[in-house]
Image 1: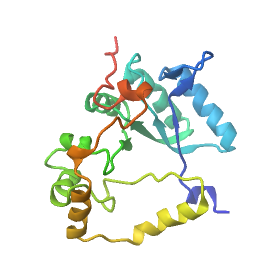
Image 2: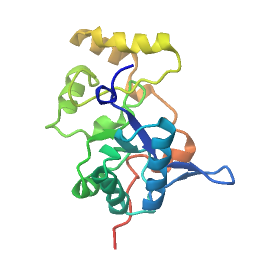
Image 3: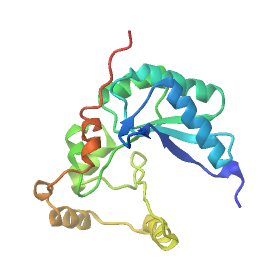
Length: 204
């Protein structure tokens, strides 16, 4: 087994199931604290490297959520903070409280609307315009593969050795035209928490 300092662990909080089996998105400080304590206990660890807010609680000012996360960094229980599906405004306000290390967004051949928000100064913009979609080989994009089978995990790791040429990327892009992709990319319950809508109230 590798020493703990050679392993980077990422985890999330923010989605809760109520007593009535209703899904809730929560970001109040008390909930943040409960979640990290429970995660550390389950994982039998002293700290988590990257801790994400899985979805943004649109009823809680992001400054309150970030304030508690900042305390957890200061206490050594987490090292870095990430946001998932956060709006541009939310990211800016969160970053003003404590630096945001990672922003998670869905980005694939079937879900490419985020390209509409790319700045012309970013790596993502230059990659998407030159090849149809960004290559995960750059420093700005890190894929998050998900699997429950070791064979698939090995295949995912092996994909790092695959290098696609520009003409191959264009061929893939042409095979799945973005204007022909239909349907929602997320469960209906989470649609109101997409990054386009995930703004939080101003802190009073």
